[in-house]
Image (cartoon, rainbow, N blue to C red; front, side, top):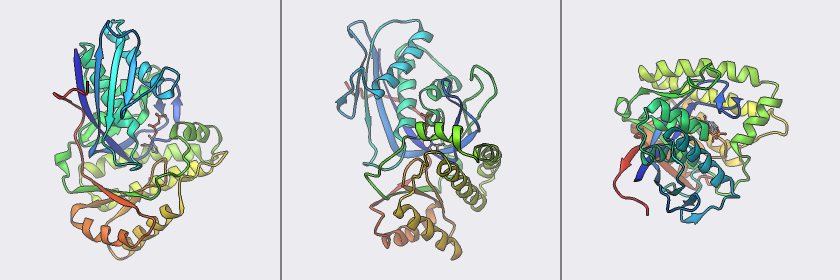
Length: 332
Ligand code: 2P0
């Protein structure tokens, strides 16, 4: 059976930075996010004896067995094959609709779409919790892309990772005015992959314990602020959580510094707008792009202010988005 699924990217409102168990991809702390409308991965999977080996095509390019991309996909397929007790090889074709270098991680939507599509194609009918756990084993943040709207990924405490999964805090309809403005600062900044960066932080940052202890409290506090729609407090918490995550990254050996001059310029502009009474807040992930958290009514003013900054190439506006869903049009 051929199955096609669309899944969306998500942005962490309180971050994940560091694995407790590298194989299971369980985190030191819980994290929270909003799934983003419009930033989608579409993936078609088919298991069939006619395939002599697994095949993986992403954005029109075939990835061979020696590539990291292929290995990641194969690992997910192997988990699904194990659960479904099948041995057939699979063909996987995947497309991202992301604007170039938008700075939103495609691994989250990619692994969520792959896991969901492969499970259905293998004849499994897994719960969101099970899908979230399997997606997490592909990429931590993918566990959160299984959720419509606002999510918390529980760090869990079970040795086998069975209680480390994402759960809905509120659906997207809970807060339709919520916006994320993705500011594209640099399209070709040299990037340390999050996976490698966070592994070094766990080992070497002198503030790692402080980071994850604080981040766990932040995640729990964020759940309440989302439920109660306390926007100002939410924005301030997301911003301070992001700064501590980056402090942890920067105090890693060798240092993991994602900020570029344009990143700082946008951060200062956001702080300036806050001083003038605007309700907008910044957050950054494993790259130089700044994401501004705001409400729909303030978007025109914020966009106008960003126009003055030469470093900002593009602004991508996102609303809260859907969880993964099966669609009819197959990619092959
Ligand atoms: C997050 N990031 O919470 C944090 C904030 C980046 C900064 O999750 O190794 O691709 O596959 O589990 O999920 C990016 O890391 O890492 C990430 P793996 P992932 O969104």
